Length: 417
Picture (spheres, one colour):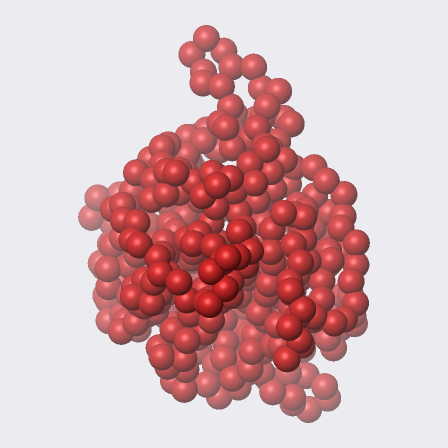
């Protein structure tokens, strides 16, 4: 596959309800039967995302929009696929705990130490478990969009290395011991593909509340839903922010955006910031047992004085972010100019690979077998934005998105088991 420069790994440390999505048979998609695998794909949504079986997902799919359904398309091609459901504004840690429970089943345990540190409940929702046989012999492929990228990395870190603080926790007479998630030793993920992932932070994290409101209102409008409809749940049971009976969409958004969660470091706004990403990249490893690849997206064009401007087809909910990032003046790795190309939410350098981690550029025509523990950076996708890589918009069709994710699924299946 690749040529280009590499960097070394960094130091180690720690880093529901949904109807069961039934397991369906997989069929070979590659001729190399001796080395292919049949592990399922898990679509991991980003900030402001939702699962298919939530109320909003029944009107408007995160992975496919109004008319498309990327999960069902992949299943029709023989690729077993699940659509995860996690807190849309929660931290990477909390979302990783939820993703673990979503796959394995059971009540979410955020960890006694972590929960006490940030002042929320230790337990969250209960999931039926879409893949209870998940193990070292029944691995998964994670496909993460936006915050789904760093959330997936956090899950891999916890699975493989656990957390020393949670393991050291001694439960009282009325407390349960730490979740198995925090004990480590679980090499249960075969690959991670990141699409527009936020691995090095984004400048718009400083104004995350406004971006969240714009994105959710834009999605509701596109789906033709009124603001008084109770269609979205922030899944913040651990913070006591369950949607109240009869509470409308707009009212619920305002209440959650005014919550104390934003004053902590246990939410998406902090985890997606430039500062938080720097520390996370030093603590969350790139695993030597996992295959990695990434796709960055650029929905801008060159404007005057070296700035980047949103393309005409950029989703209106993203254009302000595209302008703000496009005129970046921060002194960041690679220089301020390098951070200006963006998809309306994430600068291109942030989506390519975690700084300080091994990486190589994907070169067309190179047939070298991919290696584990290396981020393979695909050429930047252009003509799209942060939303149109998951949902059709203007010139981006569902057929194009289906083909894109089918290519990822086909590559995942070809990876040696």
